[in-house]
Length: 120
Image 1 (cartoon, rainbow, N blue to C red):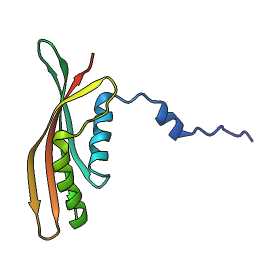
Image 2 (cartoon, rainbow, N blue to C red):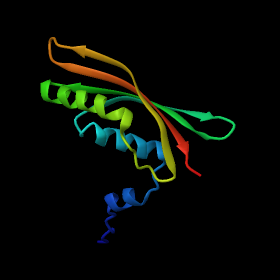
Image 3 (cartoon, rainbow, N blue to C red):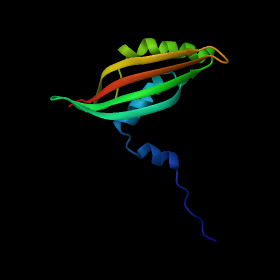
């Protein structure tokens, strides 16, 4: 009988290099206080004469009264938040839309857009 070595998948995941989009997604979710559900994230390449990067669109849902309050705090904090993404700069962070729903349960859906530039 042979014993197969066990692989620590958490160590493997930590060693996989995360890209700027994934780091931004993690930072957005952290700013949301870990209470939001990510409904959508898309990334589209962006460039000007002097800068390059990507425009990221997110849609987050905050379910329940206390979570919706966290969503309101997220909306207030987003435009001035200083993101720490190595080698990247968040040049613009805007709230595109907010949808409040009270029945049958409290739900806040927030669509945001961020411009992530390569910081050379």
